[in-house]
Length: 102
Image 1: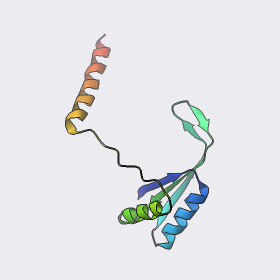
Image 2: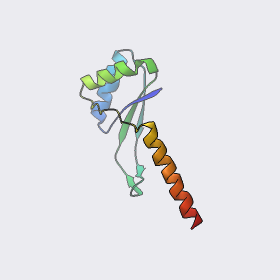
Image 3: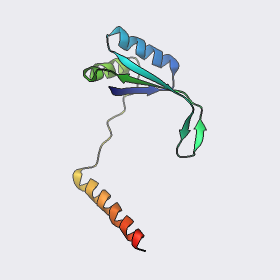
């Protein structure tokens, strides 16, 4: 099962699920309410709707169908190269160990 899409619009969520089911793509959906915003520790009363694709092989086709009905398509997150990752990780470990000694 792969996460496919999250939206705050009940209408778009319903349209997306109906379209995917029409095209014989099995989905699992979840409605999230009253979650805590970690940055402010306040309750957020906004409702979100998640869509998951049950069969991993359907993910690409499902994503294209959602884009076709207006879903946004953010570019993939660029991960740092291996060297940069090592510098960031080991640099942070070095700083943490220095703080512990003080």
